[in-house]
Image (cartoon, rainbow, N blue to C red; front, side, top):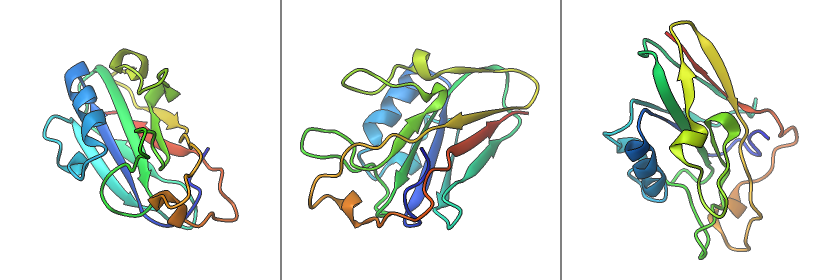
Length: 154
């Protein structure tokens, strides 16, 4: 599933360890996600009329990496959640990994990056919007449905 509206910012982080991945998940609900010193790379893209985005990470050493992305629909710099801690804004992980009653593990989201270029695609996950939540301010776009694309390579 792709972006549902043109508003906000798409935030993307690339991680190379279980610890940095877990810390990023903890920071996603705070405005510090963009300032995470433990990530390998990160990007912020303005949502657009095409309702999709792409990021290229280059010159990566071969190894295991995991990507976290979310659509900060209201532009407040964090992943908004309801009172139960469930995200009210769309999010996704490499491998389209999903956890059970929580985020996936680094191992489930990790992909092997080799010396050659490769591309991954991340589907954004949406939970029901609770009345009064900040995500409810994002008006659906008429052609939502394009997947978020993230490219990785040398």
